[in-house]
Image (cartoon, rainbow, N blue to C red; front, side, top):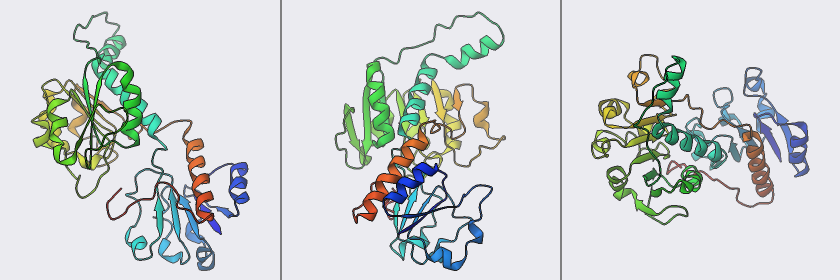
Length: 316
């Protein structure tokens, strides 16, 4: 089998893939990409594509023998689904590959909100020695996660040591390790109305688009906090702006439109932490990604189902 990598790894790592029985070709999807110069014969020769987002430079409809796409991302909005469904091309994502750094970001922002670090950094810049007696403990708080996948699971694992109560919401309300309570999607308002901190980790689908709006914010506790690290399109940002005053803190790493416009009023909120879709960044990402790719390619060439198969029709 022949595999096209548009993600760069070391020659030693590529040799490990070759040892599995693959012919490996690397062609960057970055600035030095020559993907658009691949001949029809070359395109036809690939059975597998390992990529992050090469789809603007590479027309996969011309890859007649393509059977399996392995993404380096967790999200897959960049994938041209219409070119996959009619050919039954297997699609796998990098689910779990970024869960540890993102979970650390979630823990960090929760602590920043309740320890008022943004206030103290501002005073430090001005060399002002001013105590703040509104600092609060995270201990004893109820933290509700929308979604109980790997992001929420890794976060819950770390947050349990703070003595908090962890609630979760998934499709059927099934119990999940590290979660004290779980509710079904039909019971999602239990999370919004009862939790001190609501964390969204859910993907963007036709059922979750603008799910978090004024109806949800209106039932949240006064002085509660809201965090979104899943997908920006699940959040109605205009409604968030209208209810921002009721929150102790807000932390957003994803947005409806990215990059976030300089004109957005979100920048002007005093109680918000904004990061530029940066929560996933870690020096360990390449190692974790390669291990996933290696194990999946090993399974695939052995005629076994790889991990993290995307259910395109369901959107996750």
